[in-house]
Every structure is written in structure tokens, then in C-alpha cells.
Length: 293
Image 1 (cartoon, helix red, strand yellow):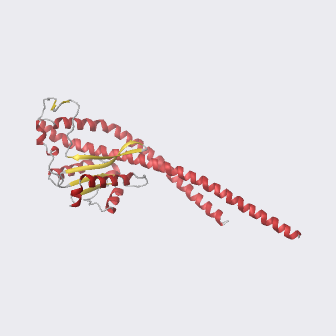
Image 2 (cartoon, rainbow, N blue to C red):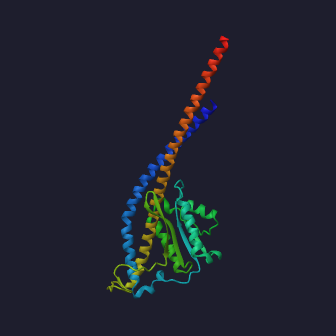
Image 3 (tube, rainbow, N blue to C red):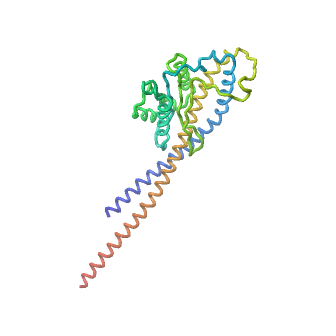
């Protein structure tokens, strides 16, 4: 009977856990749909803005913008984007591992001189980096609460200021890029200086000639902050969608595992109950035979 009571207790506990994981799966599915809609709306604008910025940077005024300069790298900042909450599989662990391996492989000599700083976005990322001895300069966990564009803009201006003043000569971003609900792509991007890429409209090394009003320099000065703000905003939305997809997948697997475990426990319970009944019948039969004798 003690074994039956223990199995019943485990069945009740796992049933409650399955209800929680199933509810979390549905909540994450709803949040994922909302996050996907946000990404679909903003991604074309972000890509086009970046394309215009790169096209402008290939003109004569390229050198006048400090954000395109490539000074000698003496100090690096790595922005690591993750989640404030757990229960999303290896989502946070993977991005932490990539950020540390990225620092070792690309900035190994700077890492030895403690010239690589980390700025976590997400409480789970902050805890993980601290436990691994990473050098943090603060945190920006509140950005993941409401995805307020104003707050994200403030962080962008701070990063731009650090780069402009020479505090950091390179700023990279590590995050999970959303592909679908089951797949997140670990991504590392150079945020500053702005990467000069070849785009459509460029023939060889000479860009298409445009007439600018106002000047190309003024347009670049206005466009660079807008592009950087929009790009960081898109990265945070991308990471949020990836987080919801990872959590939905993790909760789906947890629900399936709980269902399978319940099936096994019910089988064990029925077997134990049948054995107890058989033993009681045998005891009754043996007692009756003893009375007859």
C-alpha cells in the first residue's frame, strides 16, 4: 500500500507539472505570433535603411563619418542578447557560449589584457557571464520588458558615444536569430564600426553617382543614428521571437515527456495494485484453508 500511495503522489505531481508546461506552451505560442508579426513589419525597413547607408558610405564623404572608420582595435565591447527568464532549453546557454568563444577566437590577446568587456541584455545572460568570470560593464535587462524604442535609442546613443570617444574601437553583438519555432540561429554581428558592404547599384568599385540635397555628409550624419537604432531594435525583436520559439519547443517537449511518464506510472500503478489484490486473495484463501484443516 505504501508503494501505491507513492505512485499516486507522483502521478498527481506530474499531472500538475504537465498542466503548467502545457499552459506555458500556449502562452509562448501566442507571444511568438506577435513577435513574428513585429519582425515582418520592421525587417524590410531595416534592410533598406542599411542598404541606403552603405551606398552613401561608398562616396567621397565616407571618411568624414567616424562610424565608418576602422581604428586599431585596443578595446572591444560585446553586447550579448538573451532572455530575462529561463525554461527555454539551451537558448541562453548557447548565446553565452558563443559570446565567450567569439571573444577567445577573435580577441584572444585583448582578452588576456582584460580589454574585452561584455554588456548583457537579459538577466539569465548576466548570471551566466558572471558565473564564467566575464568582465561586465553593467546590464540592459530592462530593454526586454517592453521593447520600448526610446529606451533602445538611448542605449544606441550610448554605444555610439563610446565608439566616437574612442573608449571602444569595436562593438559586436551576439544573439539568437529567429528562423522558425524550432530553430534559432546563433549570430555574431559587427555593430560598430558600420560594416562597408557591396550592395546592388555598385559597378566594380565605383558607386552609382547621385545628386544629394542636403549634402552627402549631412545625410550620413542624420542617417547613421537612425540605421543603428533600427538595427538594434530589430535584433532585440529577433531575439525575442527566437526566445518564444525556444520556450514553446521546450514546453512542448516537457509536456510530451510528462505524458509519457504518466503512462508509465499508470502502468506501474495498475501492476502494483493488481499484485496487492492478488496477495490479499491469496492470504484470504490460505486463511480459509487453515480454518478447514
